[in-house]
Image (spheres, rainbow, N blue to C red):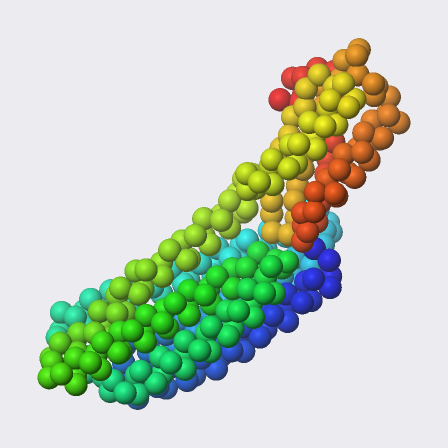
Length: 307
């Protein structure tokens, strides 16, 4: 990933972090004042996001330092590693919220000032939507860290929307003489929304772990790379080709081995270099923007060295 792109991603992540700081302060103060477990959970979520956004910024800057003696293949692995930590922390917070909410339900619920709670939910939803739109636009051509941040804010906005719906239900119940039922709305919504939101950190964790473990990239990326390799194999009449491909943060690792025989049109070191240059040009034309390409191409007359 180019340095200019990393700088833009870093600025967007810092915007997310400072907005999270504001959310955390306002939500915790508002939630404690109203006695709302749901608003307090929203504040704790935002507070956790502050540290996790800072971690994302540090990971992005670390990945941008490139390779050296300690990291001969580069530092891009810090990007998915940061997402793993982020997803695990948010998932743990959701589980904690569910357990706490169930305890509140068993104790008879919690009384909340519905009018002020509805006002908070309106403000939180509007602000969350604005940040989500901003980050999603920046993430179209940004890093995986920025896409994860945008997904997190989208989930948080949906959570705020659910909070708004829950408090509106509580307000209606309180105004129609069912205040005893309104007491259960706050903890019930915490449990339901936390369970629903668990899918966001679960998805982020699964995707990031694939990169940390060096697994293959998406089927679409593999298909495009395989197409280029097959074109080169046919063009130079190689017997076989073996492709290994992995995506680690902003780096795409491509290792190709061609099996050469008497009918191949490339058989010398200089010709092999021409094959490498040809493959590199084809991969560059794929339009896999945002990825730094790391390519290794080998040639052998005995396929056992390529399998």
